[in-house]
Amino acid sequence: MAVSKNSLANLKPCGKKFSKDYQPDRRKLSLFRMLANIIGEQELDVSFTKEDFYKCYQYIIELNEGQILQVIEDPQTPIWMVSVAKAIVVDAKTGSSQTIEKMFDRLFGRAAQSTDITTGGDKLTVVPPKIVFTDDFEDEPDNEGGNELN
Image (cartoon, rainbow, N blue to C red; front, side, top):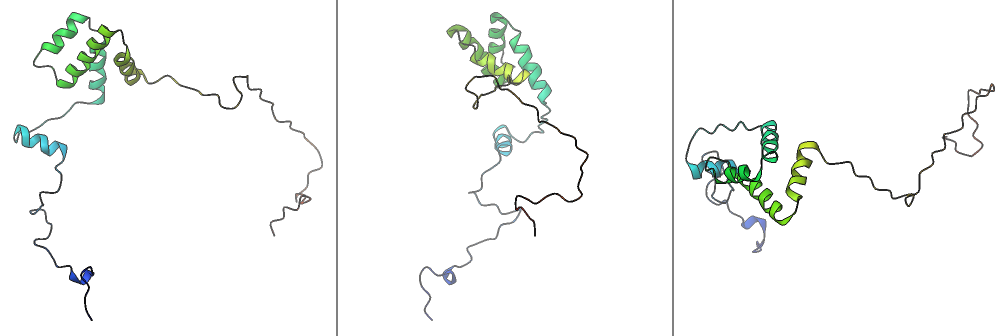
């Protein structure tokens, strides 16, 4: 039987098998590993918590323009704080409040938004159900509507 050019029987093992020691170059490095390769092998202690992040946001929000510029110019300021501080300065110059609004949304949560899609803006009237108590209780319900389960 002739084997066609596109048959699976034509596939041959190619080179080495994957292992923990052999990882082909086509695999992407994790972002953390990529950063470790760039800055060199160091013991990286990343202990920045969500609470720390929020405290930094609160700190930046409470600064005046001169203090924000000092934060931007300080070489010890983390780059993400510089980025946020610059965005606040640009917004202040253009009269926008977009960055501050987003920061408030992160700190305090977004305001609840509701959409009325049923009443066209009219008030919704809720009619409570009418409950009737009777003395004639039956063990078996009536199947007058033809909804038998059998």
